[in-house]
Image (cartoon, rainbow, N blue to C red; front, side, top):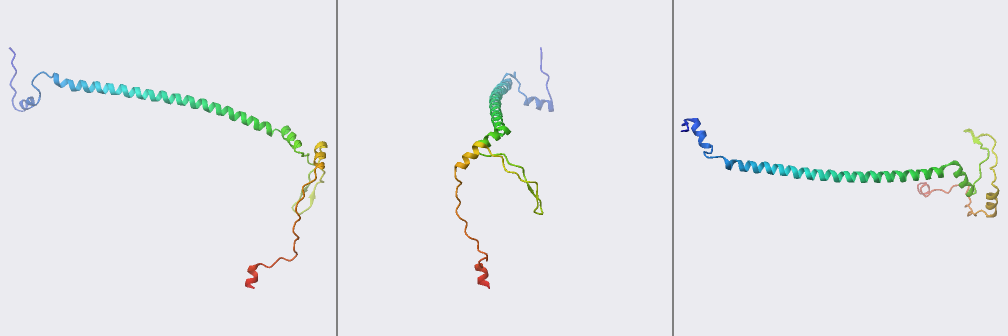
Length: 158
């Protein structure tokens, strides 16, 4: 025969606060809370994983685009280098009728000439083509007056 011992004083007051019967009802909210937390965590993990996969796909697409643009840049740079090569520049200059320059002469700061200037080398076909065309005529320049005209400001003050 089991009998509960009688509690006295402070222990009795605390015992009245606790439920007297079996505690099945107290476990249900706790179990529900744990299930909700686990379910929310799994859903959050699934959403996080999906967004990371989407970012990975975007990253691989951007890397592919970057590689294509890098290849295009290299092709364009190669084309620019081909146009800038000395033989290509010489060929294009000859097409435009340009000829190699002669021996250069330099002016010193005091006005004397250093070196002997030489004539430009004549290109046989380009020279004849340019000689066949008459040069464009420029309009005549207005004659320069030897005495400058007085300014309106000087005439008004003087």
